[in-house]
Length: 261
Image (cartoon, rainbow, N blue to C red; front, side, top):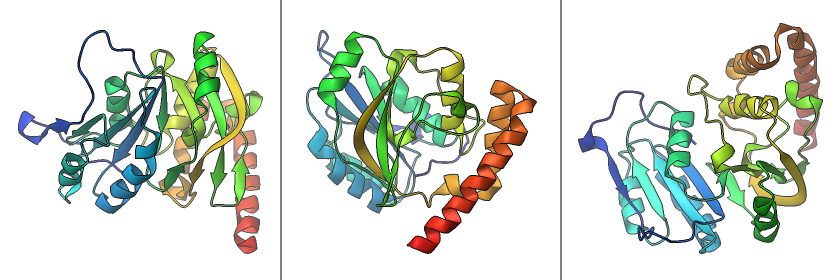
């Protein structure tokens, strides 16, 4: 997963397409799957192969590319019948691209699937019922590294740790607060914390919907300061010490898991 340079884009750098109908009065989809990518044509091809079978009247697929020059645009053009809408232009980073995807989405709920992820299923019947109740956030389980199940929680622990998995969480589009683009890696954690503070309604489902590799940029120690920045910004400095202790515990757990592989 990645996005393009942060410079301003001109009209000559903006390319878009897709097969989404533009007729007025169409019933909007239930779910918008959003993919952001940059300079990773091979991974984009894999994602399209994985996600295309899930497309249906209830599900749309949106791809936001950061202005790649590696053949990704040609792939998107050739795959126009597999993608409801795609956009390629330089952006300000991962979360800028995700915000563009949300702006382009039409679904009741949005779901982010990116490099290293694989969608397993969509709980459409349950989502339809939750949409009638106007539930803002629907958290599902995610299989990490092919062996560990991430089980979401919606409690005090979100003050210290990201207990809603980004690849397992459906956000009601109209209740989404938008990502803070000043974050490079943990903007989803910041968004989740702000959502909890804002009192967004949450439902937890006991269904595993995606696979995720944990060896991506979010594991980088160099970006760990963003976690503490989010905690301090949303809940105050008194939460920093217990948060540090928790991450030390998680680091030990990951070492043990690594030895088990």
